[in-house]
Image (cartoon, rainbow, N blue to C red; front, side, top):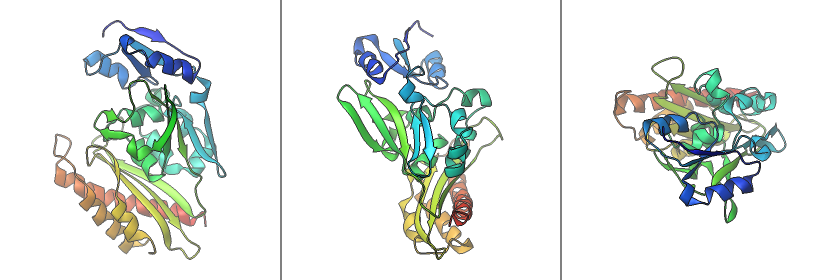
Length: 291
């Protein structure tokens, strides 16, 4: 790995100022669990690492039923996993975070970094998309917000410019009768990459029928995406076995996977169908407990 400069700013503005100097080839350093490997392998280069861990704003983590969830850009997965309110209100997102690497990795790797690394198989990305997460970005021109679903544009690529960073992820408070879930399949039980990952949020009305649904698929396309066809099919229905089967078929149809050493495209489409049935049922069961 080449020699690089290192800075640890204490404010977002300081970090943006360093990132705005292209001559120093700066790169954001949050948890570093992906970046350091990429630098060692030569997949990425950097002349200056800008460590975000000392910025108080980016280490903030707040969750409650009234205001929702706010995750700073430097918050590690472990902090979210251990946050009681987050685990109660957003169990699907916490499930996804708990599947990332080992305990050691979870205590360094950030939720924001898992999204911005741009992997189609990132675990927390489908979970964030299912929850309608919004990202706050900061750059020389100020701050802007955009849906988490718009952040990743292709494998390893995002909409962030070189002088921008993700300051915060915001998730709205769960509605009454709403809950989420996440599941994936991996060849190994621990510390592996998802062959398919599915996140879902289900909202139920007082009569038990679905009033809102959102299902997001990972590892079955160049980036994680929301299967809008599933929502249209579930709204107004009781979430029973038949509805789950319909949701699964639609998710399988929406999947556009590739074949590689981890599985064929046909296998991944079938997994998308099976996992969608399971996460829709799991999210609906949780939602019923919140009516």
